[in-house]
Image (cartoon, rainbow, N blue to C red; front, side, top):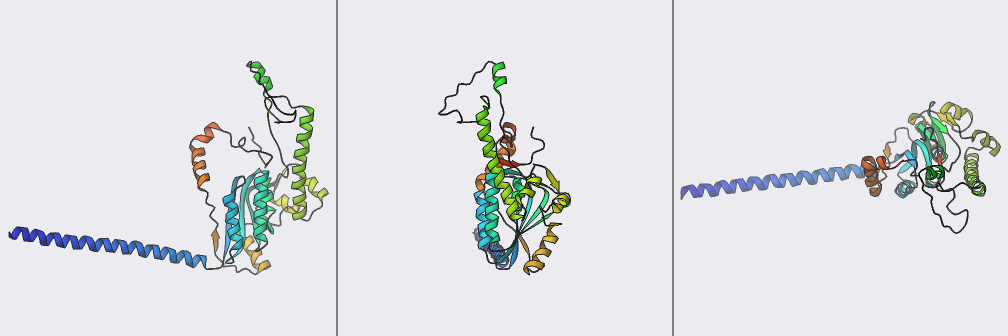
Length: 303
Protein backbone atom coordinates (compact mmCIF):
# COMPACT_ATOMS: atom_id res chain seq x y z
CA UNK A 1 0.00 0.00 0.00
CA UNK A 2 2.89 2.36 0.83
CA UNK A 3 4.48 1.61 -2.53
CA UNK A 4 1.29 2.55 -4.36
CA UNK A 5 1.11 5.87 -2.49
CA UNK A 6 4.72 6.65 -3.42
CA UNK A 7 3.96 5.93 -7.07
CA UNK A 8 0.97 8.24 -7.01
CA UNK A 9 3.05 11.05 -5.45
CA UNK A 10 5.83 10.55 -8.01
CA UNK A 11 3.37 10.57 -10.88
CA UNK A 12 1.84 13.80 -9.64
CA UNK A 13 5.29 15.35 -9.30
CA UNK A 14 6.21 14.32 -12.89
CA UNK A 15 2.90 15.64 -14.15
CA UNK A 16 3.50 19.02 -12.49
CA UNK A 17 6.98 19.18 -14.05
CA UNK A 18 5.60 18.30 -17.46
CA UNK A 19 2.94 21.00 -17.20
CA UNK A 20 5.56 23.51 -16.08
CA UNK A 21 7.84 22.82 -19.06
CA UNK A 22 4.92 22.87 -21.48
CA UNK A 23 3.78 26.25 -20.18
CA UNK A 24 7.35 27.54 -20.31
CA UNK A 25 7.73 26.33 -23.90
CA UNK A 26 4.48 27.95 -24.99
CA UNK A 27 5.46 31.18 -23.27
CA UNK A 28 8.84 31.16 -25.07
CA UNK A 29 7.17 30.66 -28.45
CA UNK A 30 4.67 33.46 -27.78
CA UNK A 31 7.47 35.77 -26.65
CA UNK A 32 9.46 35.00 -29.81
CA UNK A 33 6.44 35.73 -32.00
CA UNK A 34 5.75 39.00 -30.19
CA UNK A 35 9.40 40.01 -30.52
CA UNK A 36 9.42 39.17 -34.25
CA UNK A 37 6.23 41.09 -34.85
CA UNK A 38 7.60 43.97 -32.84
CA UNK A 39 10.77 44.06 -34.91
CA UNK A 40 8.75 43.88 -38.13
CA UNK A 41 6.47 46.68 -37.03
CA UNK A 42 9.47 48.74 -35.97
CA UNK A 43 11.11 48.38 -39.39
CA UNK A 44 7.83 48.89 -41.25
CA UNK A 45 7.06 52.04 -39.27
CA UNK A 46 10.39 53.71 -40.03
CA UNK A 47 11.36 55.73 -43.06
CA UNK A 48 13.57 53.71 -45.38
CA UNK A 49 14.85 53.19 -48.91
CA UNK A 50 13.55 50.21 -50.87
CA UNK A 51 15.79 48.10 -53.08
CA UNK A 52 14.61 45.65 -55.75
CA UNK A 53 16.82 43.31 -57.75
CA UNK A 54 16.14 42.62 -61.42
CA UNK A 55 18.20 39.61 -62.48
CA UNK A 56 18.18 37.07 -65.29
CA UNK A 57 15.73 36.99 -68.17
CA UNK A 58 13.09 39.72 -67.87
CA UNK A 59 9.50 38.60 -68.51
CA UNK A 60 6.08 39.98 -67.67
CA UNK A 61 5.65 39.38 -63.92
CA UNK A 62 2.45 40.36 -62.12
CA UNK A 63 3.88 39.63 -58.66
CA UNK A 64 6.79 41.98 -59.33
CA UNK A 65 4.44 44.71 -60.57
CA UNK A 66 2.25 44.35 -57.46
CA UNK A 67 5.33 44.62 -55.23
CA UNK A 68 6.37 47.82 -57.02
CA UNK A 69 2.86 49.23 -56.63
CA UNK A 70 3.14 48.61 -52.88
CA UNK A 71 6.45 50.51 -52.90
CA UNK A 72 4.83 53.43 -54.71
CA UNK A 73 1.93 53.55 -52.25
CA UNK A 74 4.04 53.30 -49.07
CA UNK A 75 4.78 56.76 -47.66
CA UNK A 76 7.49 55.34 -45.39
CA UNK A 77 9.55 54.37 -48.44
CA UNK A 78 11.38 57.52 -49.52
CA UNK A 79 13.21 56.19 -52.60
CA UNK A 80 13.77 53.06 -54.68
CA UNK A 81 17.08 51.59 -55.83
CA UNK A 82 16.82 49.14 -58.75
CA UNK A 83 19.75 46.71 -59.02
CA UNK A 84 19.94 45.36 -62.56
CA UNK A 85 21.92 42.35 -63.74
CA UNK A 86 20.15 41.15 -66.87
CA UNK A 87 20.93 40.56 -70.56
CA UNK A 88 17.30 41.46 -71.36
CA UNK A 89 14.22 39.41 -72.11
CA UNK A 90 10.88 39.79 -73.81
CA UNK A 91 9.92 43.23 -75.07
CA UNK A 92 6.63 43.03 -73.17
CA UNK A 93 8.49 42.10 -70.00
CA UNK A 94 10.82 45.09 -70.34
CA UNK A 95 7.94 47.41 -71.21
CA UNK A 96 5.84 46.25 -68.23
CA UNK A 97 8.74 46.63 -65.80
CA UNK A 98 9.58 50.07 -67.21
CA UNK A 99 5.99 51.25 -66.74
CA UNK A 100 5.80 49.91 -63.17
CA UNK A 101 9.02 51.71 -62.25
CA UNK A 102 7.80 54.95 -63.83
CA UNK A 103 4.70 54.77 -61.64
CA UNK A 104 6.97 54.52 -58.60
CA UNK A 105 8.95 57.50 -59.92
CA UNK A 106 5.79 59.61 -59.96
CA UNK A 107 5.81 59.48 -56.14
CA UNK A 108 9.47 59.06 -55.14
CA UNK A 109 12.93 59.07 -56.76
CA UNK A 110 14.14 55.93 -58.51
CA UNK A 111 17.82 55.16 -59.06
CA UNK A 112 18.84 52.46 -61.56
CA UNK A 113 22.07 50.73 -60.57
CA UNK A 114 23.67 48.48 -63.19
CA UNK A 115 25.71 45.42 -62.30
CA UNK A 116 27.59 43.07 -64.62
CA UNK A 117 25.06 43.36 -67.45
CA UNK A 118 22.12 45.64 -68.18
CA UNK A 119 21.51 45.20 -71.89
CA UNK A 120 18.48 45.36 -74.20
CA UNK A 121 15.39 45.03 -71.98
CA UNK A 122 17.81 45.38 -69.05
CA UNK A 123 18.77 48.81 -70.36
CA UNK A 124 15.10 49.57 -71.01
CA UNK A 125 14.53 48.87 -67.31
CA UNK A 126 17.29 51.30 -66.37
CA UNK A 127 15.66 54.00 -68.50
CA UNK A 128 12.82 54.12 -65.98
CA UNK A 129 15.21 55.49 -63.37
CA UNK A 130 15.57 59.17 -62.63
CA UNK A 131 19.32 58.57 -62.36
CA UNK A 132 21.31 55.74 -63.96
CA UNK A 133 24.56 54.47 -62.46
CA UNK A 134 26.81 51.85 -64.07
CA UNK A 135 30.04 50.17 -63.14
CA UNK A 136 32.95 51.11 -65.41
CA UNK A 137 32.95 47.51 -66.67
CA UNK A 138 29.18 47.04 -66.93
CA UNK A 139 27.96 45.73 -70.29
CA UNK A 140 24.98 47.81 -71.36
CA UNK A 141 23.25 49.15 -74.44
CA UNK A 142 22.33 46.55 -77.08
CA UNK A 143 19.47 48.84 -78.08
CA UNK A 144 17.37 46.79 -80.45
CA UNK A 145 14.96 43.88 -80.83
CA UNK A 146 14.90 40.57 -82.63
CA UNK A 147 12.46 37.93 -83.72
CA UNK A 148 14.14 34.62 -84.40
CA UNK A 149 13.06 31.43 -86.10
CA UNK A 150 14.61 28.59 -88.11
CA UNK A 151 14.03 26.86 -91.40
CA UNK A 152 14.11 23.07 -91.07
CA UNK A 153 12.51 22.24 -94.42
CA UNK A 154 15.82 20.93 -95.80
CA UNK A 155 16.21 18.59 -92.84
CA UNK A 156 12.60 17.42 -93.19
CA UNK A 157 13.24 16.59 -96.86
CA UNK A 158 16.30 14.52 -95.93
CA UNK A 159 14.41 12.42 -93.39
CA UNK A 160 11.40 12.06 -95.67
CA UNK A 161 8.88 14.08 -93.69
CA UNK A 162 6.61 16.56 -95.47
CA UNK A 163 4.55 18.80 -93.16
CA UNK A 164 0.94 19.40 -94.14
CA UNK A 165 -0.17 22.95 -93.29
CA UNK A 166 -3.71 24.25 -93.71
CA UNK A 167 -4.21 27.90 -92.85
CA UNK A 168 -6.58 30.76 -93.54
CA UNK A 169 -4.08 33.05 -95.29
CA UNK A 170 -0.48 32.91 -96.58
CA UNK A 171 0.87 35.09 -93.76
CA UNK A 172 -0.76 33.09 -90.97
CA UNK A 173 1.86 31.44 -88.70
CA UNK A 174 4.77 33.15 -90.42
CA UNK A 175 7.64 32.81 -89.78
CA UNK A 176 7.26 29.04 -89.46
CA UNK A 177 10.17 26.56 -89.29
CA UNK A 178 8.11 24.03 -91.24
CA UNK A 179 7.76 26.12 -94.42
CA UNK A 180 9.87 28.46 -96.48
CA UNK A 181 10.02 32.10 -95.44
CA UNK A 182 8.33 33.88 -98.34
CA UNK A 183 9.42 37.38 -99.46
CA UNK A 184 6.04 38.78 -98.37
CA UNK A 185 6.32 37.11 -94.94
CA UNK A 186 9.82 38.54 -94.53
CA UNK A 187 8.58 42.02 -95.46
CA UNK A 188 5.75 42.09 -92.88
CA UNK A 189 8.00 40.54 -90.22
CA UNK A 190 10.66 43.18 -90.81
CA UNK A 191 7.96 45.88 -90.53
CA UNK A 192 6.93 44.40 -87.17
CA UNK A 193 10.51 44.36 -85.87
CA UNK A 194 11.04 47.92 -87.16
CA UNK A 195 7.99 49.10 -85.22
CA UNK A 196 9.28 47.61 -81.96
CA UNK A 197 12.70 49.08 -82.70
CA UNK A 198 11.19 52.52 -83.25
CA UNK A 199 9.43 52.28 -79.89
CA UNK A 200 12.72 51.41 -78.18
CA UNK A 201 14.64 54.22 -79.90
CA UNK A 202 11.89 56.73 -79.06
CA UNK A 203 12.03 55.65 -75.43
CA UNK A 204 15.79 56.20 -75.27
CA UNK A 205 15.40 59.56 -77.02
CA UNK A 206 12.77 60.71 -74.52
CA UNK A 207 14.41 59.46 -71.33
CA UNK A 208 18.00 60.47 -72.22
CA UNK A 209 17.05 63.80 -73.84
CA UNK A 210 18.71 62.86 -77.13
CA UNK A 211 17.61 63.37 -80.71
CA UNK A 212 16.44 60.21 -82.47
CA UNK A 213 19.25 60.70 -84.96
CA UNK A 214 21.83 60.48 -82.18
CA UNK A 215 20.13 57.45 -80.63
CA UNK A 216 20.06 55.67 -83.99
CA UNK A 217 23.84 55.99 -84.22
CA UNK A 218 24.09 54.14 -80.90
CA UNK A 219 21.28 51.67 -81.61
CA UNK A 220 23.04 49.30 -83.98
CA UNK A 221 22.80 46.46 -81.45
CA UNK A 222 26.27 46.90 -79.97
CA UNK A 223 26.99 46.75 -76.26
CA UNK A 224 28.95 49.44 -74.44
CA UNK A 225 31.10 49.40 -71.35
CA UNK A 226 29.90 51.58 -68.50
CA UNK A 227 32.56 54.16 -69.38
CA UNK A 228 31.50 54.19 -73.03
CA UNK A 229 27.85 54.48 -72.02
CA UNK A 230 28.68 57.48 -69.85
CA UNK A 231 30.59 59.15 -72.67
CA UNK A 232 27.65 58.60 -75.03
CA UNK A 233 25.03 59.87 -72.58
CA UNK A 234 23.34 56.52 -71.96
CA UNK A 235 24.03 56.64 -68.20
CA UNK A 236 24.57 59.44 -65.68
CA UNK A 237 27.45 58.26 -63.53
CA UNK A 238 29.97 55.53 -62.74
CA UNK A 239 29.69 53.92 -59.34
CA UNK A 240 27.57 51.67 -57.16
CA UNK A 241 25.21 51.91 -54.18
CA UNK A 242 27.28 54.54 -52.38
CA UNK A 243 26.94 56.85 -55.38
CA UNK A 244 23.22 56.10 -55.58
CA UNK A 245 22.78 57.15 -51.96
CA UNK A 246 24.91 60.23 -52.46
CA UNK A 247 22.73 61.33 -55.38
CA UNK A 248 19.57 60.77 -53.32
CA UNK A 249 21.01 62.86 -50.49
CA UNK A 250 22.26 65.71 -52.65
CA UNK A 251 19.28 65.84 -55.02
CA UNK A 252 16.33 64.82 -52.85
CA UNK A 253 17.59 65.51 -49.29
CA UNK A 254 17.18 61.87 -48.31
CA UNK A 255 19.20 61.10 -45.18
CA UNK A 256 22.43 59.25 -45.91
CA UNK A 257 21.89 56.90 -42.95
CA UNK A 258 18.36 55.87 -43.93
CA UNK A 259 18.12 52.04 -43.79
CA UNK A 260 17.73 50.06 -47.02
CA UNK A 261 15.19 47.23 -47.13
CA UNK A 262 14.95 44.73 -49.98
CA UNK A 263 11.63 44.32 -51.74
CA UNK A 264 10.41 40.72 -51.62
CA UNK A 265 8.67 39.54 -54.78
CA UNK A 266 6.78 36.36 -53.87
CA UNK A 267 5.39 34.20 -56.65
CA UNK A 268 4.48 30.69 -55.49
CA UNK A 269 3.76 29.47 -59.01
CA UNK A 270 7.13 30.75 -60.25
CA UNK A 271 8.88 29.10 -57.29
CA UNK A 272 7.52 25.69 -58.24
CA UNK A 273 8.26 26.31 -61.93
CA UNK A 274 11.86 27.29 -61.13
CA UNK A 275 12.25 24.14 -59.04
CA UNK A 276 10.97 22.02 -61.92
CA UNK A 277 13.26 23.80 -64.39
CA UNK A 278 16.30 23.33 -62.17
CA UNK A 279 15.71 19.57 -61.94
CA UNK A 280 14.16 18.66 -65.28
CA UNK A 281 13.33 21.61 -67.50
CA UNK A 282 16.90 22.47 -68.47
CA UNK A 283 17.33 18.99 -69.86
CA UNK A 284 14.23 19.26 -72.03
CA UNK A 285 14.07 22.86 -73.14
CA UNK A 286 16.31 25.73 -74.20
CA UNK A 287 15.69 28.76 -71.97
CA UNK A 288 16.26 31.15 -74.86
CA UNK A 289 13.84 29.34 -77.17
CA UNK A 290 11.16 29.35 -74.48
CA UNK A 291 10.81 33.13 -74.82
CA UNK A 292 7.67 33.98 -76.75
CA UNK A 293 7.19 36.94 -79.07
CA UNK A 294 9.60 39.72 -79.93
CA UNK A 295 12.54 39.87 -77.53
CA UNK A 296 15.03 42.53 -76.54
CA UNK A 297 17.94 40.38 -75.47
CA UNK A 298 21.71 40.49 -75.74
CA UNK A 299 22.85 36.94 -76.38
CA UNK A 300 26.35 36.61 -77.86
CA UNK A 301 26.29 32.81 -77.40
CA UNK A 302 22.89 31.87 -78.74
CA UNK A 303 23.78 28.34 -79.70
